[in-house]
Amino acid sequence: MDTVHKIGRRKTAVARIYLSEGKGNITVNKKDYKSYFTTGTLQYKVQQPLMLTENLESYDIKVNVYGGGITGQAEAIRLAITRALVAINADHRAILKPEGLLTRDPRMVERKKFGQKKARKKFQFSKR
Image (cartoon, rainbow, N blue to C red; front, top):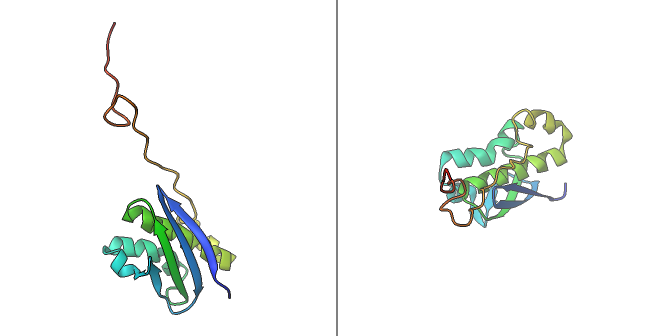
């Protein structure tokens, strides 16, 4: 099996993963993913597609991720890993699709409007 390259995005975070056969090592920006994502929730998000397909120790994954915050980065990595697993074995699609892992979350931050403090602060109301 060759290396599979896939991209995942979430908010402004972009993750490029390189998935190849191995022992289950996940490296994020040249660090172990457990030292990059310090909370258990984020570590779970990264591992989720591998756990569901029972491939935790089957593949080595190298990740380059930039932009956004750590939560957006973890979810971008999750999407990229999911796409790579489906590319390797189409049977994984039936497991991952019902969990919502194949869907790219389209929500983005709304831009700030000129003359306002925030995106959704209303303009000054005047009855006349």
